[in-house]
Structure formats: structure tokens, C-alpha cells
Amino acid sequence: MTSKLAVVGAGGAGAATAYALRDAAFDVTVFEKSHGVCGRAATRRKDDCVYEYGANYLKADDERVTELVTETLPTEGLVDVDEPIYAFERDGDIGEGRDSDDHKWTYESGITQLAKRLFAATDATVQNGVRVETLDRRTDGWRVHAADGTDYGHYDALLLTPPAPQTADLLGEADWDHDDCRDLRQTIASVPYRTVISGMLHYPFELDVPWYAAVNTDTAHDIGWLAREECKAGHVPDGESLLLVQMNEGWSVANYDAHPDRLLEEIAGRAAHLLDDDRLTDPDWTDHQHWRYAQPEEPVDRDALSTGADHDLYVAGDWVAEEPRLHAAVRNGLETGERIADER
Image 1 (cartoon, one colour):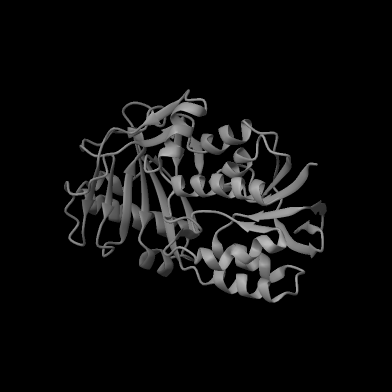
Image 2 (spheres, helix red, strand yellow):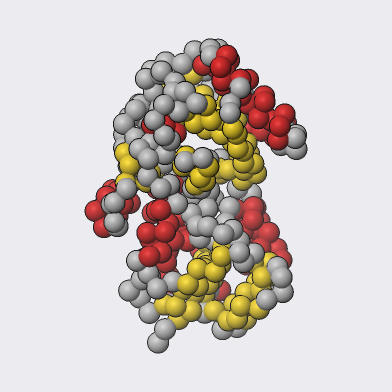
């Protein structure tokens, strides 16, 4: 007998869960509020450039995920960034010092290919542009209602994959009066998140530096991460530069509501100062993204989530995994899919 599973969120964890259930007796429907997939591992395109403005790449820190990406899924267009990651502290001096020269994978057409290829290997239905607002717990499963009032019907089980604060909000709005709901919501809502503003700065010249990215290791600089998208094959035309500048938590929170023009002017100025290159104060085009829930700073108490399965409810994502990285979210999604199959 086939069971119906509703998945909220088409990020790495949601896609991996659908993939893990591809040969099981499950009819999987994924509800995604945006018009794309892969969540905070996000890709945009502009003026012949492809760029990641959330998660920058997939690390080779999990054997199972590495085998999935490099052997099982199609590898056409898979990119391994060769240049190293350097480091800097409050003083802004960039130099070697971080052992981050392992594989850093993305795709020529963008990191969202990871979720697209996972979904392509399944029969899951992905409903884009659907913002789930209300969940109705029934004795035999769940009903899913969108913000526009659409009732998407009954499901035997439910998987929530948004960032922890948004998952907690969904449970808070759920029609489910049970002590376990309140306990789960409190546990999930306790996960702290880092807020990040990302600025993308394009230049009609290429920078002459020996690194792909530089990371602030003492969190005392306004810039937390600066990366060169031109180091990824197929992302930036020859002779051009595209910088991804992700600002640290304090700066991002203090400037979250500032006008984008001022934000980008200040981001460009700080990038120019960090790299000691005045040309960088004047990019020829820019882009930006506010990530209110960019990265969980602590994992959730996984044991406290176990009661959810008693109510046909599961959660997955980087905040459930051991570390806040894309590979961990994918691994957690695979494990969650297998758990759902075993328990139903």
C-alpha cells in the first residue's frame, strides 16, 4: 500500500529525503514557497554570470554524500574549485592559515543543480510557489493548507525542512492541540540562527590574488566571507570578477533594514579596504540578499524530536544535522527518508 508524504521545503534535506524514498511505497509531494529548489543553496544569473549567494559549494566531508554527487548522480557540469581558502582577522591581513583545500563542489549552471538532480531521480511532485501556512493534524495523518487558502489534501505523514524558526512557526499555527506539539515547538524554536546580508559585486576586470575565498576567523571584522565566483568554471566570463561578500552577524543585524543602495555602497567600500584596491568601490553592477535565518549556530536536541514520529511528523535540515553545512543537510535528508520508510 502506498503512503502519502508531504514535504515542506525543497532544499537539500527535502530533495534528499525524496531521493531516499524513490524506490519505497511513497507518493511524495513537496511544497516550496519559492520558484526554485535547493533552499539556501541558491543560484542567480545576470549578464552571463552564474553565482551562488547563499551556500557557496558542497564540501567533501561525508563519504555517502560525496559518492552520491561524484558517482551516482549525473556528473556533467560538476565543478571542483581548486583555489584555496585564506583567512583574516580583525586587522584585515589576508594570508594562509586555514586548512580548507579539500574538494569544493558546485555545478557550472549553479549549486541548485544538486537538488534538481536529486528530484529528477524520483517521481516526487514539486509544487513551487506554495507557501504552506496551516497544518491540520488528523487521527490518520495531516492536511496541508497554503497561505492563499488552498487545501492540498490529506497526507499520511509530514516532513518539515524549513529553518528551525520557520518550522516552529508552522507548528505554532498548526491545528494540533497536544502537549507533544508544544514541547516540539519549544525545542525547535530554541535553535539560534545567524543573520547574514550577502552583497554581490561585479567588475569588468579580474583580480590578481592566489585564493578563491577569504574567511574571517575571529568574527571581529564586518566582512565574514569574501569569495571570487570567477574561480568556478562556467560562472563568470574571462577577464571579469564577481565577488560574493557575506557580512558578519553584528553588521548584518545592525543594517538589516537599510536601503539597498547604501548597503551595497558600504559593502563595496569594505571589500575595497580589505583587499586594498580602490577600484572595488565602484562595481559596474550589484545584487544583494538578506538571509534572516542564514545558518544555525547550534544543533537541535535530536532526542527531543523523537516524539514527532508518534504523530507522523518528521523534521530535517542542517539544523537537525551535526553541523550547519549543505552536505550535512543532504545526509540528514537521506537518513530521514530511510527512517520514514522503516517506520511506516
